[in-house]
Image 1 (cartoon, rainbow, N blue to C red):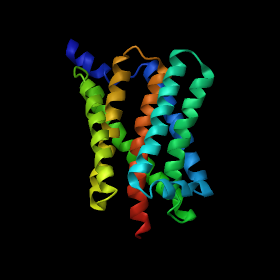
Image 2: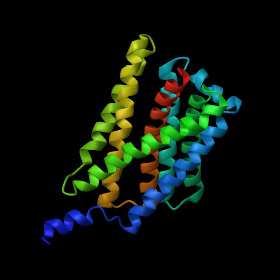
Image 3: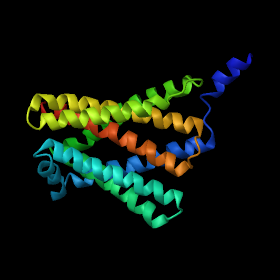
Length: 229
């Protein structure tokens, strides 16, 4: 076997560190889905209707919660400050939990588990495809994915701002932010692959945020489809 063939075959064999990051992100995501399901049965589900009465307000509120949560969690890990890390993780869980629970509440209770299941399967397939692509191209630098993700988020926010007054533009914002999370996921997988000086817990947080962002966008599509049945 040539050295190239050995490198290609080994690119799909994940190290323990990589499995730990993926496992940590998966655990956080499972907890988040449970929280979304619980929130959908409570008055907290109505928060979405309040903040998204003006779409840009809702986007900025949830965007701020997620950004602050991730920054606090990362700073906590860097400074070895467990309370700060926990505050960051709780903010992330609550932010995505309230958003996802609010989306889910538009469905009848007996259909909500189905919606979560379908969204989960689609998310798993999409993220697995991106992850496989990143690992298959082991000689490719995916640092630009991070820049693309940031650009997509900014375009999305501008479109949502415009869509707050011209509703048809909201679709552009939805697509842009969805793409932003997909590229963010690819970037996070590349960072895990390259082990760029981050500890496993920080990598898990970054991966979880990307997956959760993809999941809630797919959940919106699934809920719309099921609501029309």
